[in-house]
Amino acid sequence: MVGFKPTEVPPTAAVKFVGAGAAACIADLLTFPLDTAKVRLQIQGEAKRAVTAKPTNYKGVFGTMATMVRNEGPRSLYNGLVAGLQRQMSFASVRIGLYDSVKQFYTKGSEHAGIGSRLLAGCTTGAMAVAVAQPTDVVKVRFQAQARMEGSRRYQGTLDAYKTIAREEGLRGLWKGTSPNITRNALVNCTELVTYDLIKDTLLTYNLMTVLRPRFCGWGPGTW
Image 1: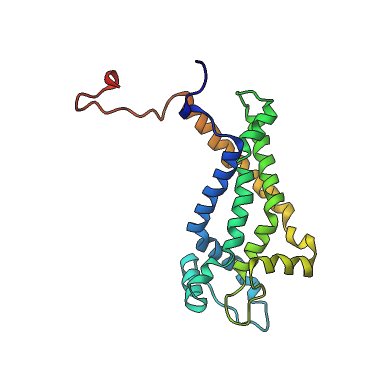
Image 2: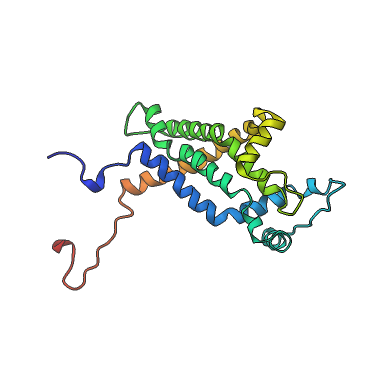
């Protein structure tokens, strides 16, 4: 019978879509404090401009994290985590999970994809991901930027943040920064996924990841 063995059946687009989102969520859970510290450092100059607020001086990534824990508690490192996970499920699922499908679309189903088709696929899924996930990114950053102290919180929850931004700034407020973000992620996606794709193809073509089976206890290639 001609066909794939059970272990050789390629994953469907749905499996890739969900798998990419789930993997990105796990990565986000592990690295979210670092992302929060990055946001606080990026907005530090703006905070000093506020006349009524007493600015907090952050120094370095780990210094920022320590200051946040001391002033706002350990939970402050995970401000915006819910929006962050929403972002990964919508962003990474499209950016990574749909890459192969979009690449096949550009190659019209051909198994041999050129560098041009790969670059187009990377740009397309990167731009699509931002267009879909931008509201979650806006809310995530807003949460990370606000201090988790009594009387200083503007948003009381993730859903409240979406509603507040839409009410006060209009629906366009949820898509602030979309243009530069699309440009950035289209380029990043091209670099990351196309490089990964080319390296993967090279490894598979030349069997560079073939595991050498141990020849001990009477076992060897001839006995398997």
